[in-house]
Image 1 (cartoon, each protein chain N blue to C red):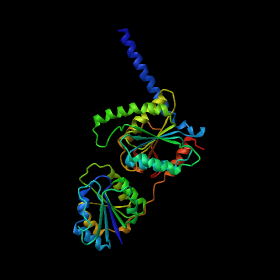
Image 2 (spheres, each protein chain N blue to C red):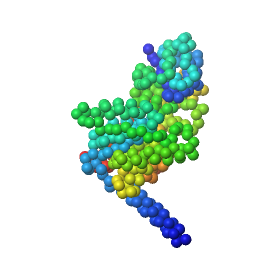
Image 3 (tube, rainbow over the protein chains, first blue to last red):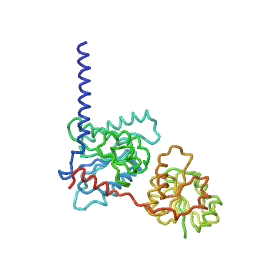
Amino acid sequence: MAVLVGAALVVLLTCLLFLIRLYIVLKSGPNYKPGTKGSVAVLIVAGSGGHTSEILRVMECLSAAYTPRHYVIADTDRMSEEKICTLENFNQHSDRDPQFTICRIPRSREVHQSWSSSVISTLNALWYSLPLVFRLRPDMVLCNGPGTCVPLCVAGLLLGILGMKKVLIVYVESICRVQTLSLTGKILYPMSDYFFVQWASLRDKYPKSIFLGRIV
Amino acid sequence: MKTVFVTVGTTSFDELIESITTSEAVQALKARGYERLVLQVGRGSLLPDADSCPHIRLEAFRFKDSIAEDIKQADLVISHAGAGSCMETLGAGRPLLVVVNDKLMDNHQLELARQLHMDSHLLYCTCSTLTETLRTMDLSVLKPFIPGQPKHFANFLDKALGVQ
């Protein structure tokens, strides 16, 4: 009996500690300024199709201070890799080593996939995301809505909770979303440090969001 | 030669291809001075022959790596409600008529087309009102579209993250 109570207490305390750490990590976002050390390592979730085009529009404008850049794409996606290389080679100055990498993880949700199987494939994607994020240790994760963002952001958050590294989560909601957030947006809204929306109607509904007009 | 470019994106939209190649629709296009009709039909089951519409110069293809050139050469773009097609056309400064596929309920991409219509950046109809719209539409009501400003995002992030 005593062992059981002890075990329950340990589990409870761990959960409590976890939640406190989560709270601290989420609160520390605005004060965390990785830019002051010179460069910001970015993990970019390119996802697929339209999401990729949108996120690359944003990447075009980020300065060279955002290096290295690690692009994550779904393993079933062929077009994104081509688009990323086109952009990066365009920006490339011949005297430097390439400052970007492309990593593949299993897609967490195909379009029209059912909810129950989505949960399983998202867990599967998390299994691949954790080692990736722990190895790359980015200063920030930048994403805009493909399902693949969720496991990668969770992995980034976990890095912070374990006290290994604060990873900023920067989310840009897709231009397609005018009145309602995407499912990914809804999940990441409470856990992102900077949450951008592109239409005023969304800013009014989500007070924590940042609205700078249309970005893409 | 005044050209209309019709695009259905990566999926299929047979009803649009069917509607735009009816003799009524082609007549409406002719009446407005359009002489060439280019169709991007995607995965659809319809791929009309060049001689299937005797009154207009017709070209049709399924996919291309980039339709940027077709958009640039068009005097009017007729598109499905896909965000990519809408943004690409508006970004190129071409007048755009979006034809909504009312068989696709709960399509979140409609949100964007609807908003851009409310802001007078594009015209909006369904397959059943296409011919009527082609007859009566007034392209001069369309307001120029100012592309999004990723620079604003970059500046904000630089400041927030302390990037020098």
